[in-house]
Image (cartoon, rainbow, N blue to C red; front, side, top):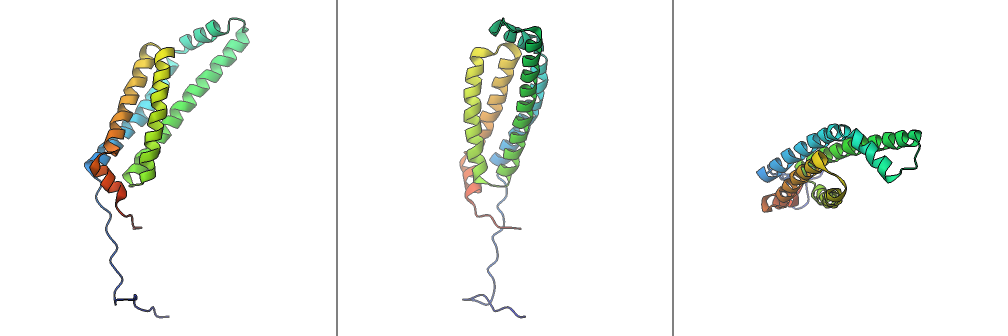
Length: 165
């Protein structure tokens, strides 16, 4: 079976080459990898505050039995670990998707940053010490990544046409 030439010419147009990843995206991706690592470190920091978790549970619910306090503490630990792992996975996913030039990843990253901003503000009231400082550090990593994702060179990269290789 033979193929007919492309209408209007004898050759198929050459597909555009993928534009190089700009430095702003490369730096944003590096910050996102740092954010993933920080999320994992955050799990360790949270686990070092187990005594304060138990104290908070008891102070907020003084009528709980010892078993109920232990169960609540175990649930809190599970939530801390799960949220840290999910956070790390989201950082990695957004890093890879942003590097691939997927504009939706820049938008999702911005929404996740806005949610984290609300979380940090709420945590400023409820958390103390190392946990509060660490959450602000992770927020600053996110701020840096978001600023880099919305730079002009990044926008041009996200808007460039994508072709399957």
